[in-house]
Image (cartoon, rainbow, N blue to C red; front, side, top):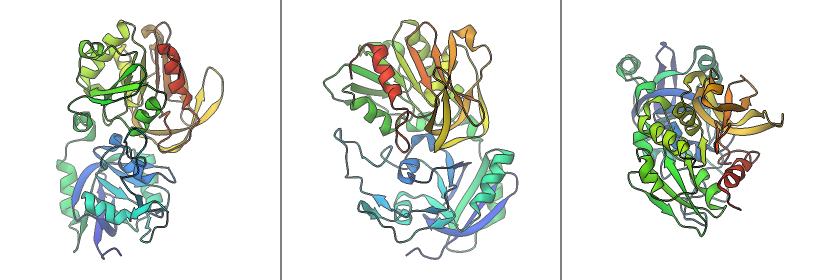
Length: 375
């Protein structure tokens, strides 16, 4: 049973949402964003791409199937129901909290998990109103506090005003590995430049028999090439892609020498930047497991899983040897690119299904073909 707690959320435009608290007694300040997924909250909360953000779930009921055990592992020892080893959201915003979850794998409630991890949450507010505000005005900085007494809203607003803006924070530095991590398999080696990689991406590579070496985001192209990889994956991650100067440089040099490259999410943006293209920030981003994307080569529309706030600009892509591969069916922004001459593909969406649909997992098979490897 959740103890009776107070909670408040304020936005930089002066909006105030007062509700009930759950999780940790704490104040956090970050960018407030929303996701449209109906399920997958353990995966979303542990997705490193949410580093530095306060996440609003638009589906009205959260926590109904609880939180599974970390001890449930896949064949490579990765926790099956989580996308990293810990939560990365700063705070959680929901409409209704389920206090009595029901599922065979449930080990604790959402409240208990957030309390253990030191993450505050607010519920009992109009998440539809909040989401509509973010859609109209764009995502913005906010502060969330959970307290046993009344929350000082003026103090929260002051904290928002003083906080550094999300776009200027080097968040990838907070989520990348510090030393290489090797996942053994009998197949050829693929290097993953870890900018906050989801475990789902690693699983899709590993189940195709590849030996995966996960390296820090600041590794040079020479160090990566010393591992003799068949291909390189530039991973997803949080924040402004333009801040990842060393990763962009390494990606450019790897492409120049002809290494097959797959970019995913933030990796898609950094592939584009490495070749001279530009990126921009979306008004409210694409987050959820139900985002339609069009494959321009076939005309088919696929349901995809997404979590990003930046996108690649279409201007002058042809000059940099790139063609648009995918478009978002909702706003026609770029969701994937290909190089016309080199073995380079990239998707803005997540082709791995964690959480989400399996529609686009074949992107990993295309990567295998580029490397000349039979999966």
